[in-house]
Image (cartoon, rainbow, N blue to C red; front, side, top):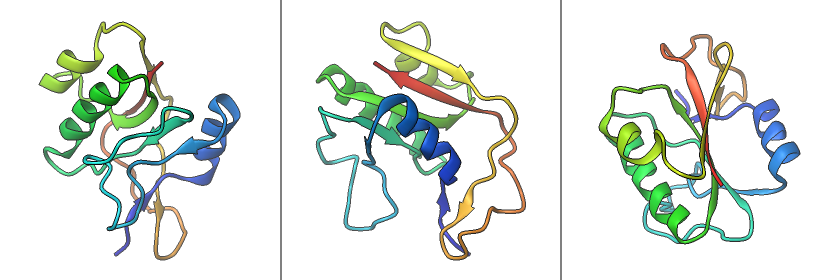
Length: 129
């Protein structure tokens, strides 16, 4: 077992495009990104938990923080049939949907090795600018 982490090569691409980032959703049980304020001075990179109902909470929080002026890059599965996708992402001003080619192999936090399996759905980077 281990927590699912974003691979370093993907984080390097975030830094290359947007500069240093703030992670309001880190692998740290003492940090609650759904309750805290996000960084107004850096891009907020969010790879939320993909458990049922969690993505919607993080997308709604991103919309709230975006309205306050935060810039956000959110890595989530392409679930274009969901309420949150249509309410907070699709055809909204200053939001770009980047469909990713191929599947990302996430990293196991305990072993630092990629998981052997991939997510069953394609991924997208949603940029709230």
